[in-house]
Image (cartoon, rainbow, N blue to C red; front, side, top):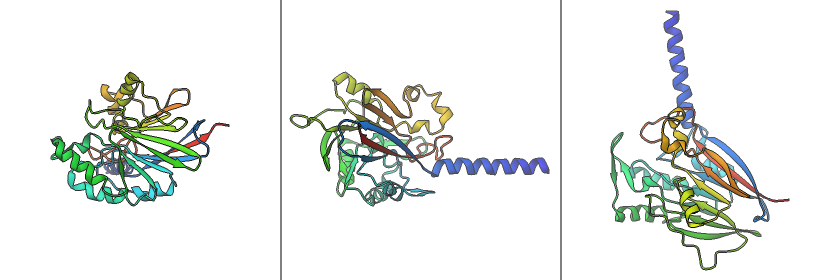
Amino acid sequence: MIIAGLALLAAVAAAVWVYDGTVRAEVTESSIRSGRVRGTVRMVQISDLHGRTRLWNGSVAEVVHSLRPDIVCVTGDLFNRLGQLPKVIQELERIECRHLFFVPGNHERKEQIGPLLSRAFDEGEFTDVLRRIGTGRIRVLANEGEMVELGNTRVFVYGFDNSRYGKERYRPPEGEPEGAFRLVLAHSPSIEGWMAKHGVGYDLLLAGHTHGGQIRFVRQLLKRYRRYHVGLKRTGPDRYFYVHRGVGTVHLPLRIACRPEIALFRIDPKD
């Protein structure tokens, strides 16, 4: 009886640990210094919601708003099923930030119709998904950029569409702005190789897609994920690349040793 009781207690404790690690987000903070900013800029990245808008520590909008961001970046995969899209859009539009950007992920091109089955959208359906996302306050960037003025600091935000490999294009405005902090958004971290091949520079590159493995020890077994880091990596002088763990889940509704994440970046001037 004692052994059975201890086994049951251990099973309950493990279930609570897994559940907490699936629905309680960690706010990660990264500090960067750049000669391209004139005052502190606060950026928040969220990624891979897959329909999740509520967390144990508050809704996504509540957690993001508490971080007082100047710019919010959403790097793709809003839903697993298309029916989840309206509530996700509604939640994102509750975020109190003037500059709210979105780039499409691979799950904007399909919906899940079973645990391991999905239905691909045609180009018309994909275009309609982006139209729905961008109807309100969310600015969709799909191979385009926009300049953001924050006091004396200019941030050039460029968003790639790598929702499907081969869709990436770099179309900067005529005479790419000099002196602006270059923030680049993409869903898949594979964009770094594409950018290097095409000579596209950046100060901070934000991506998602990998979920950090979602089940951390499985990530070590998957070669396609093992090649990508998780979190912040310095890739050159004053140049940084961040791969986000995501908020939601796909295929399996759990995370193990890979808690959901909302990432805060504090960009400060160089002394």
